[in-house]
Figure 1 (cartoon, each protein chain N blue to C red):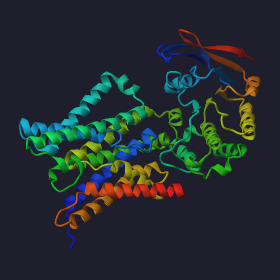
Figure 2: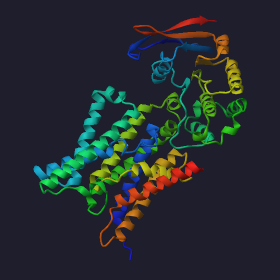
Figure 3: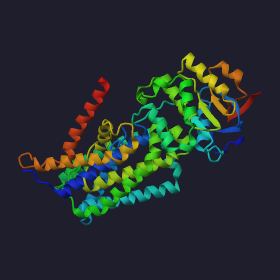
Figure 4: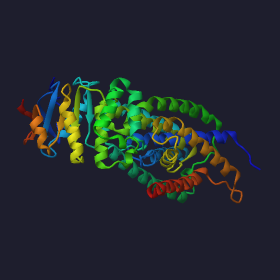
Length: 285
Length: 200
């Protein structure tokens, strides 16, 4: 018999919404369909904070992992904003393709560091959050809504405001600049929002590999969102959230010998297959 | 309009110097060898539109391909610009006139990602002229175009007597004949200079 866990459905909805929006923003501002929170290094960055938070918890004083990671992430964001004000030229000199390459390299580095740290922890017989790589909502606390719901409202409002400029940036950046749009400012705002959304999800729920890459492509394959940036930023994430909610409930109710498969694992497999099918269909057509 | 280039404008670590007069009407041609900084010069003007009083007064057509991550039909591009910037676009009559003049009706319902090189160039030029402006900056507008399309667009440009067209081009001798002003960008050892070589 199917049970519905409303709290988990809400968590899954917010997760799907945030990752889809974050992926769309990354791809539109970089004019690159391969851009995503994963390829831009956002996942690796938050995992690094998880490792630091876990180290603090293991060797200094015990802290709840999710909130500690989120606090470290916020401190990093503040430092980034301050650096942007003090030395804006550093950020201005980075071109989008360089950012993507840096992001991929950084993700690979953090993956390797994670493996090393895991090995060392196992050697010391200490507990390690190995399940971090497969996001799930099992252990999530309802107090997280204090952060997630305002973030959801802000994300919807900001993406509504950015939709007009992003529509033109998607077409052609030179034309957008001709019409007076400050493209670099919009790029920075969008990427900051994407980073914040990704950080919120990974801090509390773990990594949902490549969902930020797959979900925008899946949504764009639907006729309501194809070529319509406004819909892609406002309504597609909502649909993605609903899909994520449904998937999570399926994982919750359909267990494998009593064990629940993490929804992050299942969504990565299902999403990747869906992406391959979409691309192959495009090529064949 | 006299354009005083900013002192911190550098191309390949060399200062870009010289005086550039932006005429209010006519065709201005910018010539120079490959890699000398012609596109960088345009990008500099584009990025400093407010300093050079070009905001709401200029339209830039780049040499790069339109590449929409979210693929859309060509007519939607015009609809989106018209909806979001109604004060910056030409009237409907002029819009239809442009499309008909450039024989681009068949492109309106094509996806941007399925356009060929020449079609892509034609759509970019259409978008450029769709935007209402006094100054039109066109970076190699005739690349990829066939002879017929080149003639159509060139004839239109010659007839734009009330506008100022600033064109980067280095393969069409017809432009030399019709240009009112010609600038050449030259690369010396210490700096890059833009200077006037011809004035009608």
